[in-house]
Amino acid sequence: MPRYEMLNNIAHRDLRVATGFGPEFGDAVGMVPAYPSEFAELQREYPIFLRKDPDTGGWQSVALLGFEQHENLFLQDGRWNASYLPGAAAKGPFLIGFQENRIDGSLIQEAVLHVDLDHPRVNAMQGEPVFLPQGGNTPYLDHIAGVLRGIHDGHAFGAEMFAALDAKGLIQPITLDVQIAQEHRVGVNGLHAIDRDHLAQLDGPALAELNRAGYLEGAYLMLASLHNMRRLIAEKQRRLRTQDAASAAGRN
Image (cartoon, rainbow, N blue to C red; front, side, top):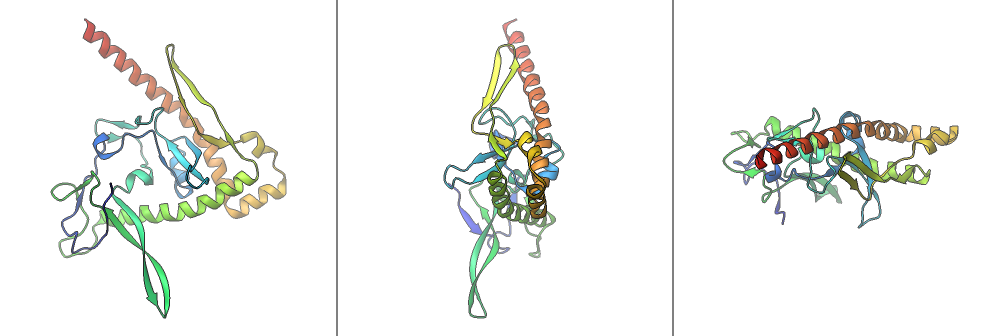
């Protein structure tokens, strides 16, 4: 269970965060949340899909990392093989929480950083320091704060964006059923994507409405991202060949 505390430079002055990658850090996952604020970077390397949140019924965009629940095809030998790390992975043990402060007689909710002290990346001995010896933020913590701002802004924007796209009938379920090798087929359930044909058929006023709101660019970035399925399939095929070769060598 997570154990969140509000981050401060006294209680957490010795806090360090491991920045490597591996299953031991929780990186072996088939998909991670994605946010419109990072679509321009994500679409260069990851397929971006949509899923329905089973609790709220709202839409959540995700970056697909593999074809199984615990398969991250970008993860190899302690590295994440991509030039851009999704914010949901980059944030590590941190998140934005809120506290109430009374300002001029009014209760205001202010965003503050929290840290999960039971996260596998948290270590008091090794890793990136969070605070400087004199108490200021390290460049690492400043970077994390920027990542979390992007997630916070992207989450709110995404909820409105996906609702608008859905209202226009642009979000449709897809069947992700891929023949990886002659005897190996993979599939992922519950994914949705932007309907390219329906988008092309929208009239001028509808397109202008989406464009003014800033949603049209996101829809096209999601469509462009689907070309990255080829990369995932190629990496899955490579790993299957490696496994087959290792099995053959073990039999000899």
